[in-house]
Amino acid sequence: MRNSSFWWVLIVLMVILDLYVFQAVKLVAQPMSARPKSIIYIAYWVVSIAAMVTLLLLPYLPFIQQSKFLRSTVFAIIIGLFFAKVVAALFFLIDDIRRGAQWLAGKLFFRQTEGETIQEGTRISRSAFLSWMGFAAGGGLFGTLIYGFGNKYKYNVKRIPLSFPNLPVAFHGLKVVHISDIHTGSLTDKKAVMKGVEKILKEKPDVILFTGDLVNNVSEEAEEYMDVFDKLYAPMGVYSTLGNHDYGDYAQWDSPDAKKANLEKIINIHKQMGWRLLMDEHVELEKDGEKISILGVQNISGRGRFQTYGDMAKAYEGAAVYPFKILMSHDPSHWDAEVINKFSDVDLTLSGHTHGMQFGVEVPGFQWSPVQYIYKHWAGLYENNKQKLYVNRGFGFIGYPGRVGILPEITVLELKHG
Image (tube, rainbow, N blue to C red; front, top):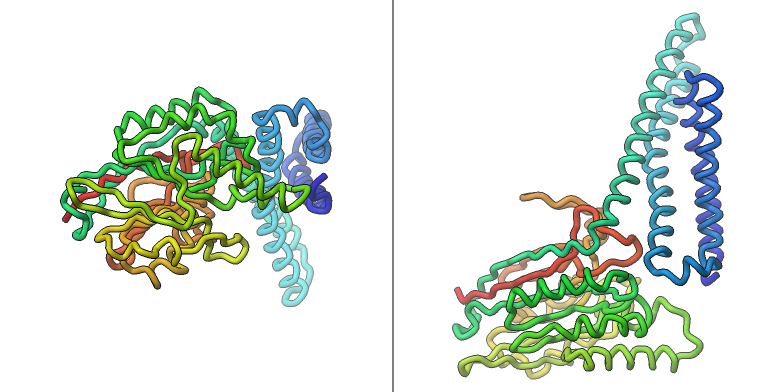
């Protein structure tokens, strides 16, 4: 197994968590008769042990490894169970802390009297309530994750009008379709993906911009979908950049040359699909004698855990003459780390990378996702003085094969002069 120590640590944590949660199971089952109580206990441990054994054997089960859909679904169910128990355990922990504080206060400040028996009865009632609340919260989370399996191909078209006083008049009304994070290594339904491509074409964009992560790990993942994404067309072109997953950093390679060859294949796949891959460079768009520039950088991250490959200065060289500039940069942390400080005349930056964590809440006037505690800019439109950043929520998915609250996105940006 590629990372056996990690998996064994995870298994140990799952065992500890299961033992802890089982105490709450016993508490809520306490009023039941012996038979249903035994059924609940047996069912709990059968499911828990089956999850742990399956997780250990997952890399060695050929019928699962041969199916991307089955592999990702089984893994997601197991991890979903784990996090559901974590959420439930938080409620149990609150109750344990409460009971511990109550016991300590009783020892320090009160003598034991008959009245404590009444308090004990109250304690059990409160414990049962918090236990049921914990199971409801954990079960709700697990049910939500299962529901989200059906949302991974429900492409959401977001139309965003953006005004810029320095946009040349000839480009007023320019329609830009922005997509990001396709992750072909996760895709399992070619027809559903084709429907997403058809949605893009239906918008009749003037230009299409893709901001990285064509694959999860290796170039072969994209080959099956080349005849889908080569259908993307716009009169001013389809332009692309690389994301952190495109460099093969998360796969094992026999040699540095093998990793380099993989990247070269990915670069060639962009070319074969008719996409103009921008590798720390810029291109010119012209209309009615007026010009704007599109800059594209390799992955640049403002966060230490992700490798930086790009060179913004190189991409910008010679672009100062253009009155309006669009930057394609996969990781939105690059905007804060460099763009707004050193390249203040870059008008619009387009990024992806976060996926909105594929989990969150978005309603008019409010959006939330756990990823916002990691990334300052994680979904949608952001502004700093005259500069704008748009973070696409991702066309594909990775890890969890679903979407909850944060749907896959096709962004349609209409640029206006004014």
